[in-house]
Amino acid sequence: MVRPLICFVTAAIALAGDTSKSVTWTGWFSDAGCATGRANSGNFTPTSPECAKKCIKDGTPAVFISETAKAIFIVQDYPDVLDDLGYRIEIQARVNESAKTIQIDKVKRLEPVKLSCGGEK
Figure 1 (tube, rainbow, N blue to C red):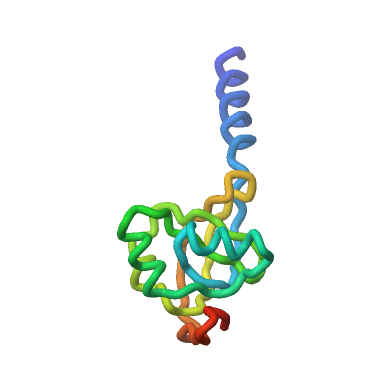
Figure 2: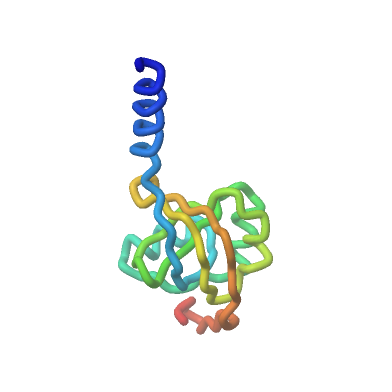
């Protein structure tokens, strides 16, 4: 009786620690440096794809800017992030809102990013 109880308690603790939820959102990939500054001012719009690509290659974490959630999330384990820079996208993903991380399951490109001189869409 003790062994099944231990297994149940262990599984319950593991599930309690998993606060991820499945979402379908629209937004853009960027780098944490550019996106964080913009998000802090309430601006959840695309950033320069060229700048983001350089920053990500230089080691800045990739993020997803969610226009749906009005938040940014650090992208975990998505190797095609550089290829999808420069597009407004729809994603299916698992998000951990408390950790501010996102695991991408599927990406659909919607349209290319069009920036004006000021960096706004």
